[in-house]
Amino acid sequence: MKPEEMSARLSWKEESNPSELIEYLNLKLAALGKPIYGEKADYHFLSMGASIIANMREKNRLLSDHLPPVDRRIQDFLDRKLASVFGDDVPLLPTRTFVLDRHGLARCLSLPPDRDWFKSDIVWSYRVKQGVLHNPLNDRRTTQGVFHIADTGYPVPADKIEVPLSVFAKLYEAALQPPEKLQEFPFTDTQAAKARGFVSLLLKPLVVPEVHGFNRAKRSEIRFFVPGNLICNLDFVESIFGNGGDPFLPENDLSLDPQTWTGTSGCVILAPHLIRLRKKDLGLPHISEASERQRREGMCWEQEDECYNNGGAFKITCRDQSGVVVTLIADNYFGYCKKEVKTQIGFAANLYGLAEEEHAGGAIAFPSYDLGEDFKFPSIDLGTDHTFEDTVNAMGEAMVVKEGRWGYDRQY
Image (cartoon, rainbow, N blue to C red; front, side, top):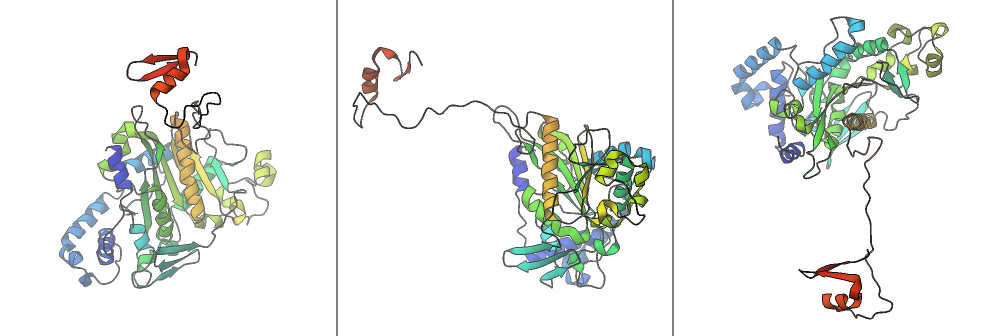
């Protein structure tokens, strides 16, 4: 895919009228075997395409363990890193998710069509004239004690909290098992039968800008997985970084055109329920058996009922020099989602090299000179309508005149 085609795809906005969009969302829900909004008889294509939908549902069931290429790369990384904990049974990334393959679907899914608001214990959303207003429970967060990194042998900065890989493995396993209430789609909130599950989004953020005649633009790939209740987070993220389309389709697989791919892959899983897990259950040591760093960073317990990170929000990352990053965010704060994408862009830029990216921790600088825009001739009055010939006469022997009515200063 050419860069200009990629840009057009990423900037595309959903322009369908609401009724068409609702029917499209219902078709996707029906294909996944989930409850739809309203009654089936109210939607012409749902009724007419019942056999096609049933066929798709059966194929989806048979391919329930099949992952799109980007997810397979991430899963292969997890299989390598977590084999010491799970052996050959590393938990699989969410499959049969509701894929947001177009910009605007997340916004429509964030509210029931027959009501202008949605409320849960962690987010309130309202339909307003400008679109949709989302109010997460926490719209401000501190960074103190928030950033945790799994010990994979890759250096952990001193200002981040180092976490045993086995603890990350258990957090990852728990992240894939959110409470049923957290999985409910706001889209079907006004109905007795509610759609539940994971929603996924593919991002292709720009890492290396195109320099005409020197290099093509290069992008990274990042996958988001969120429980249905947190679709609003994906509405926020895709509004900033665009929508990369359906990850199952070849035209959206960056690896098929290596010249436009950084070779890096990222994954973000939202799991606010992780704050309820206890340190002891995750395998952290008692304070009497902990190292000095573990005691300093709170990666140990004294009382058996102590929650991980003292029950506060956190995000934990597992990554190495292969270029794959997997991050769990135990919160629904929008800022953490945006910051994580920017962090992964910087990580990709640092690994790729020669990338002038604002989050890469450095930049390539080239010297340039400003010779000024205003010139004055204190001893020579040329007036305001001077000509090229006037300049030649004024410069005298200091100027070398060339054909085409131009010249250069002999000394400078």
